[in-house]
Structures are given as C-alpha cells and as structure tokens.
Length: 123
Image: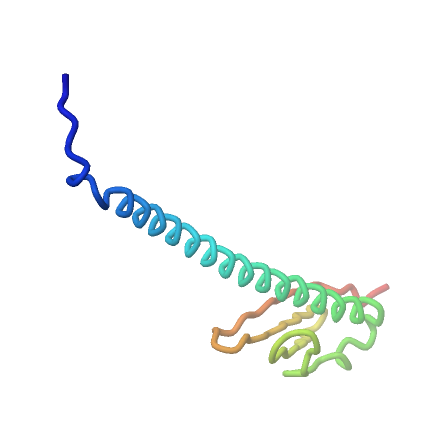
C-alpha cells in the first residue's frame, strides 16, 4: 500500500497548477484576438476588392452604352470615391477598353483591379 506524503511536501502544488492553467488560457485568448484581427483585415481587403470590381464594371458599362464615342471615355488617374487613395484609369485601344482601379491602404502596399473588354463598335 502506498504511503501518503506529508501535507507539507504538497503545499503550493495547487497554486502552480492554477498558474499553469491561467498561462494556457491566456495564450489561447491571445490567439483568438490575433485571429480576429487577421479576420477583420481579410474582410476589409475583400470589401475593397469587391468595390473595385463594381467600379470597374460600372466604367465598362458606360463604354458599352456609348460604343461610337469610346475615345471620349479615356482617362488617367481620376479619383475614385469609396476606396482609400483610389484612382481609375481607362485606356482605349481601338475596340479594346482596359479599366484599372488602384487603391492603397495606409501602411500597406498598393492594390489594383484590372478589367478588360472588347467593345463591338459596328452595331
């Protein structure tokens, strides 16, 4: 039969177990907070990409609506509302149109969305 250890030798064991549990819990909470920050950043990036896609398709829609005057829609570095430091460039090359939307978040590199289409000018 095992001999019970004196209570004096076990003093503080519960305190150490509690401290280790608090440490493990704290690391878990920090990981959740880091994942939340990454998630918010990814959602924000996805929103800006979706907005850029919408703005590019909107510009292409104007071109498709007036195919005989394509050259009038060429523009370079026009400010775009809704995107941080957003700029739009429309390049017309014959019956080809390329719309480039660029934006840049503070402290990050530049992002861009490019949409290209062929517009039939012979209706």
